[in-house]
Every structure is written in C-alpha cells, then in structure tokens.
Length: 323
Image 1 (tube, rainbow, N blue to C red):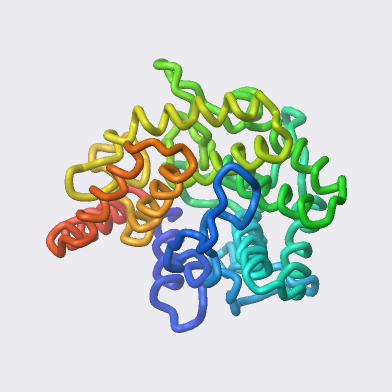
Image 2: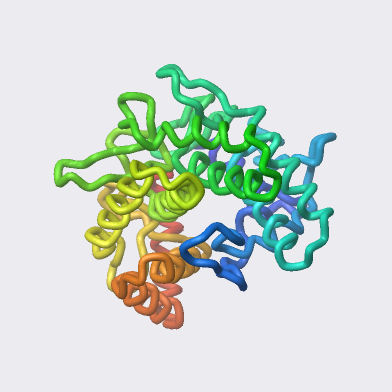
C-alpha cells in the first residue's frame, strides 16, 4: 500500500499539468556569477530560477511546495533557504532592496522555526513524512537544511548586523559537532571519514549533493565567526569527499548516494549536473585539483548520448525496484 501511494504521488508530480514541488527543485545548476572565495559574499550557486518561483506562498511570502498525494502543500526549510539565497544574489547583483526584503523574510522564518530536537540541539524540521529507503517520519531534520540555513543566516547578519541572525546560526551549527546518535548530523565511519548526512537513516547513505551543500554552510560559519572547530570540520569533510569521490564514479555516470542496494542509485540528469557544478565550486574554494578532475570527467560523461541514456534507464529501474 505504501508503495502504491508513493507511485501515485510521483506520477502526479511528474505528469500532472499543474505545478508540483519538482518545478522548484529542477532548475539549471549554475555557479554564481561573482563568486567570492575566502570571504562571505554571494552564495556559491546562482539560484535565480528558484527566486522566480511562481508556485504557492503563505501570507508572509514564504514558499510552499506542492508534493501532491497525502503531503500536499508544505513548508520545506531547504526550499525556503534556497529561495531566499536566490533573492540575496539578485540583491547583490542589482542593488534592488526588494530582493533584500524577500531574502530577510526567509531568514526571519528560519530564525522563528529553529526547533529543538529530542537531544536538545536546534534544527530545522520537515513536518511531513518522506518516502526514502525507509520512511523519514515527521518531524525529521537534515544536514543539508542545517548547512544552507546557516549560509542564509550569516548573510542576513552580514547585511543587517542584527545579532538575532548570528545567534540562530550559532545554535544551528552545534548540530555539526555531534554524531547522529547524539542528535547531530555528523557520521564518522570506521576509516575516520567525517560525513554530514542529508537523510538520517541507519546505515547512512552519504547523499553527495546534500553533503557538499552542508559543507558550504560549515565553511560560511567559519568565514563569519573564525571558529576553529568549524574550520576543522570543514577540512575533515573535504578530506572525506576527496578520498571517496571514486566511490561515486561508475565510469559512465555519477552516483546520487551510497545506497547499499544491489543495483546502485545513479544520479538523475539534474543531480549529475548539480554534482559537476558543486565540484567546480569545491575546486574554487579549496584549489584542490581532484575536484576539477572529477568535474571535468563527469562533464564528459554528460556529453555522451549513450551514457545519458544508460544512466536514465538504470535510474528508472532503481526507482521502480527500490525508492
């Protein structure tokens, strides 16, 4: 029954003529046009298409995504943050204060909706169940939401000087210090690799795009506070990605995660493109040639028509068999 409900919701989202949550997520991944390295500036990715979101909003201008099925319209802290960051970049580009006002509306939502989890840490919760390898039961939290929320709030603090944004950021950052079993979003594997998990499941799946976005939040926190703990976590997580990128490379496409299933979970065309952009940003931040090498390699995969077709078919089969 759960599978049937899942397939029905997915069918509605992909094939209904009305807008679904996919109309927000599936933009074209782009690096920010004026990427500053070593200091806080525009967010690393453009997000201009997300800023142009024309779906549902609440009375305060906060976007609501329509997931269809039993979830319906709901707040998603990651979407709210990306929508805000898109407007922040537009403000930095144009100087138009309306974009700053929209951005700060999203930042205010993040401050108000920072909740305490069962271990006493402050997190942004998703208040709907989500079908994954196992159902993520509401309320659930994510390293991706934590990292991008921090990236938004430190920029709100930079623009306004209001301590309320910095204080919320400090509270949210605590989740990166603690292992998942302690209520945090960090997982340290048997080899000592430090991962930040987008989906809190056991065993962890190491979703690549969520891990990288989370890392940028840790980096932004360090740039703002000069906290040595943040710098250490950033360096440790960079080492993890560098040492494990080969595990996400199939020789013709990138993996979305380490699913642990017999058939591996490939990235969709969108997420493969996102991986390439994220690795290019990682190269700019770290100046590590490994990230550029993988970005170039995965871009070559993307240009191969047979590879694209093979990846799409395998992705469809995975979704039908697993999740």
